[in-house]
Amino acid sequence: MTERAAKNDHRSRKAADVQLFTKSVGRKKRGGSLDPNDRKIDQRVAKAVERMRPEEFDAMLRDGEDQ
Image (tube, rainbow, N blue to C red; front, side, top):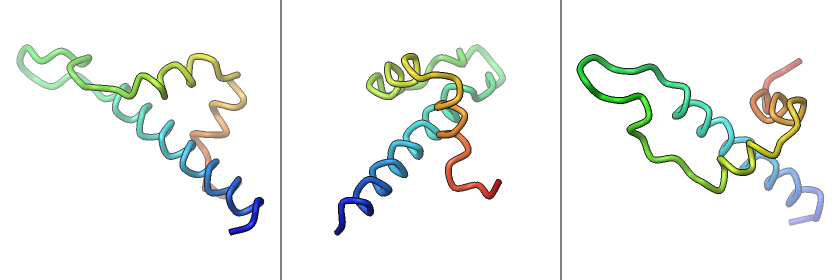
């Protein structure tokens, strides 16, 4: 695997982690008394998202989409 391919693969995995994180954090509360924060989240990804600039975060969410 070339260095360029490895960087692209790493970026794709990081983008997938961010997308999964936002999907799990952003889901709606279900009926009953279940709290919307009853899910487990990856703290490593949570800290990374907190440190991201808004432009970088947007790019991660849109990774793989045609512009």
